[in-house]
Length: 201
Image 1 (cartoon, rainbow, N blue to C red):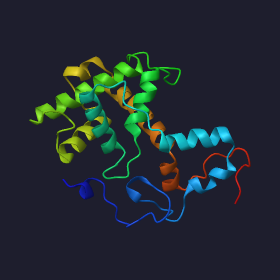
Image 2 (spheres, rainbow, N blue to C red):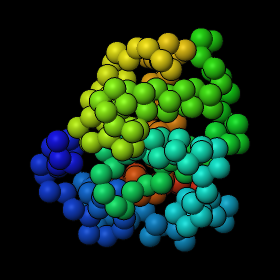
Image 3 (cartoon, rainbow, N blue to C red):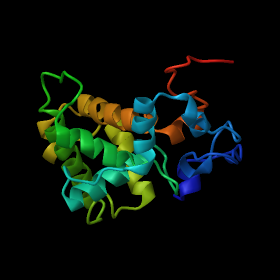
Image 4 (cartoon, one colour):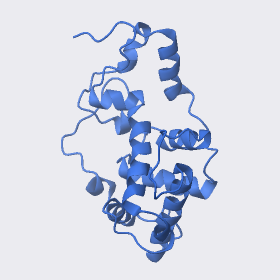
């Protein structure tokens, strides 16, 4: 399965100004970073850092990072550059151990949940004769992700997790990292931070 088949773009939505993931967006001339001078200094510093100061990978080992990154690319349909560096921000949050202030009673802490998910993804890929999830074809990766999302993975690492809830944990991290980035804001036409002037038409 090709990238186009897995994640079709039937509308030909090409971004002309600003940056969006894969340069696809419904607002082709919108660039939220043009508003940077309207933000207060603290807001400006935080938002620009998401683009200019991408954190290094420190939580995941190299092989884990390759699998986690491939998984995130599939679930977020990031098939080509430019990509939002979601893995780096997920890794940063896990390394800091901040979490979201709660966890499911039948799952380990989020960092351990992520490690077991990564191990489980690699185990699934090996059943299809690939060395790892990251080394698998897009067709195999997509099929594994679909089964994960439906809670239909069993054996190995999956026996140590509530698979459905593990899916919710990793997707929460993925969506938080993706939609906190200005490139995603361009894609969906979000106006960015309201402080200090508020939103205007």
